[in-house]
Image (cartoon, rainbow, N blue to C red; front, top):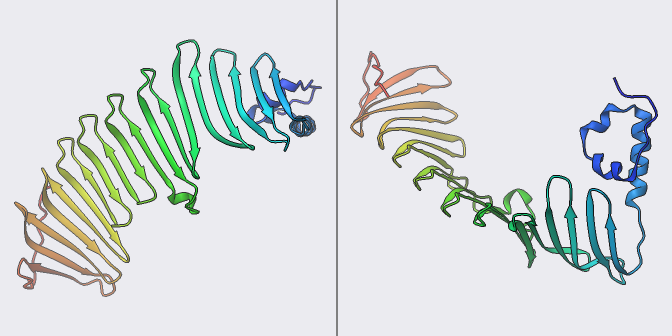
Length: 273
């Protein structure tokens, strides 16, 4: 049940709990007072100058220009169990560069830069090697198709590559072999075994889909489907030996040999995968 007893809302509590579910434990009246105080804490008018704010959780230094905008370099230091220091660079209120380091271990944690409407964000392993990079092009108005994200193994090889601009997605094993390769524009999604041989391919273009199954990189079976029919092709040693056609409207099923000759009364054996 929500807590109903009086609760003293402190300034540091406002920012600490503003986005946490724990505030829901209080009554509706207490929550209302909480968010009223939050709104008050967010409305601050500052004159031009250099400012330094510090409480038991945070230490923040920044500058306000004559236009009332954050400008130049700002420094943020967070206490309590961690010692991460962030440096922010602003140009007329626009954040153009960040860098966060672990001051205890003297290790870079992350950094970002906005240049020519392209935002580059990077995070790092404790060794200092690049762990992840994301490039977001704000000149592309479709935000679901404006990002290139690359995740790296610590040895520098690529683990995961997701390019929403070109519609390409790739996943690699730590050995360097390809695990998955999808291309939205070409309409395929390929899955690979650990040794790099093909395992399965999905094709999807328009109203027709196709799935191919492989054994040790050699095609073993293929399935296709459109609005009118579905087909299933069977192979031996990579060569098609017969296929089955199922009419989705009439529910009729026919079997043809590799030369497209009808095989009436054919009982379809199932080839083990």
